[in-house]
Length: 279
Image (tube, rainbow, N blue to C red; front, side):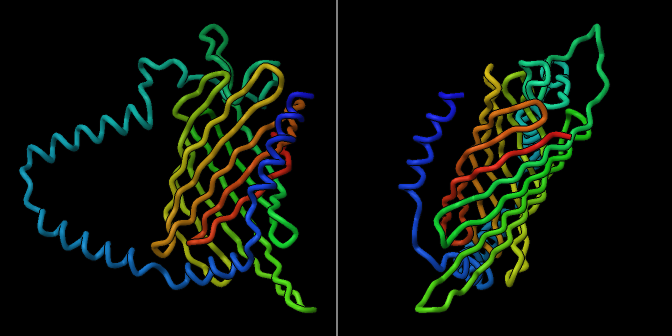
């Protein structure tokens, strides 16, 4: 526990020194997302023109490319259920329920366990400075070990102080994803997410989202998790990156970490403090 606190005290001090104090970011993000990117539109037009010129391709080449794509998708993103035993690992009721397993435990052929239905709820207060902070609420519904449905909700608040007046700008960012764990070891899992992102408030626009996530579980009730989500809305990037350290106690955990958002041109760095519960 002492090593956990000392490690992230240093980590927190590093984040504080690296935070950006420029304001009006939220308002700039919303304006840019509403206006869109002229470069993205011009490049998409030119790419569509160039692709229309290269329509005539030999059918055998298309067939070979199709086999390669299917093989890469199956073995790279889904896995080989005939030869990869870890894909049959059981979903645990919660990490460290038996003192050692993370999100998954080894599949035992002699004692077949029932499928676990699990809901993970996490909430973080994210802080840049006194004029820029917010909240990140995350929920995962796991009907069984094969996939999960995940929702993320970021609510940002930025205060612009001029003379004796204070203006508050808000931005709501949502992610709705279907997640699949490609690797399901007892101490480590790695997967991808696929879905949509949405920015509310004055923007009200959505885009396609793709991401990666991973969890590593140590032997002392401490785990580390990382996740990325890449998206574009109106031809502009809407990306989210997070790194969390978690200290587990039965069905609860406490967390300290870092989050980085890129919404259009502006970037946001936050220290994240919170916790979660497993149902």
